[in-house]
Image (cartoon, rainbow, N blue to C red; front, side, top):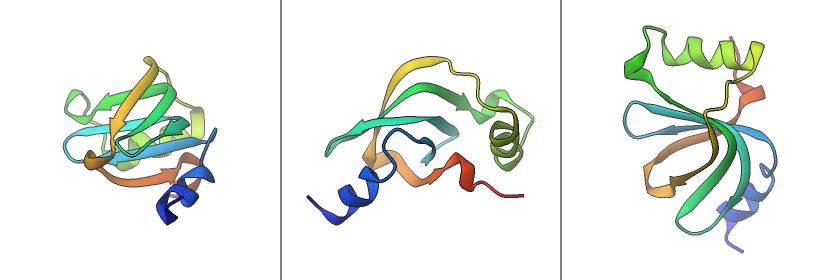
Length: 92
């Protein structure tokens, strides 16, 4: 198992935030991963262009009041991911 896979394994079944290239943000439970994708379940896929709220404010609100899932499952290309964090690690 590669080092990054060991780290990812510690995030399994937890609520995570995926920042990606482009205007989207993904929030959901990390269900599994492989060499190409991270799979989130009960996920909120949010296009920041559809909101006047900043990315930081959106995450703070999601951490405080929870998310509104709009996907049962979503595959996110690892090539597009800029960062991964636990939603609970979002701080003001």
